[in-house]
Length: 309
Image (cartoon, rainbow, N blue to C red; front, side, top):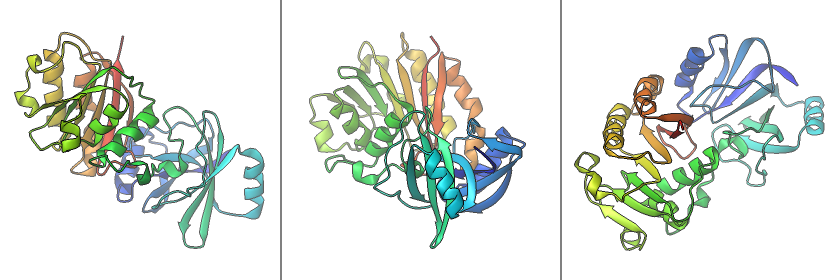
């Protein structure tokens, strides 16, 4: 299976930065078609199914065959393990199945009313198993205090994060408690750091401890003797958030099992300058396992890191 074009689904509004990101990481790829939520690229040779796109903003990508034709649809149906239908800016078809590792996926993409495109991809580790890379909002429980719950559970699914019952997690920027809710329901003990108000249901949970301070006022004695996970979701610029995290990690006498960071992009082009501040965290013995602008992220991205050894 080959195509002259690659489709890339992204958050509506991020198209210009996506083009710059792809140009930086894949200089031979040139933009071809662009609408809010989708961009296609053409390379110097046809794309094959084993092509791997290095992009934080790419929610989903695959071979693009343009407007739907009966002949191409028949060919792809015969080839595919499953079909997923989605719109470039909206929710996926609720009937679309989740993809499993190595599934051959037919992408049926609504570009505009009455205009359907066809594409395909192989589902691999680190890719979203959901149609169009959209993570449904209706998966948020009624009791979860905020949409941060959705960001957490989408990250768990996307990066296969091995949270386990009985582990200890620190969340920096925890108010009002959406991500804490997700961790607590998975049986983790959670220390939340935030001067802002936490939801009463979180504060009164037996597995939660509230440190009502900013990260700059956090002392190692405020924390348990060992933490398994550190999560960060602060409403400040990425460089400042990562500097604060760097200081905290240097205070610890051990290395947590992993880091999950939500970094705010007050301007989309901040994404193009993340490599250097992330290198400072990697210098402390971590490696980026995945970095994505998830469907439940606003103008932000999610970075997952594990220790190098």
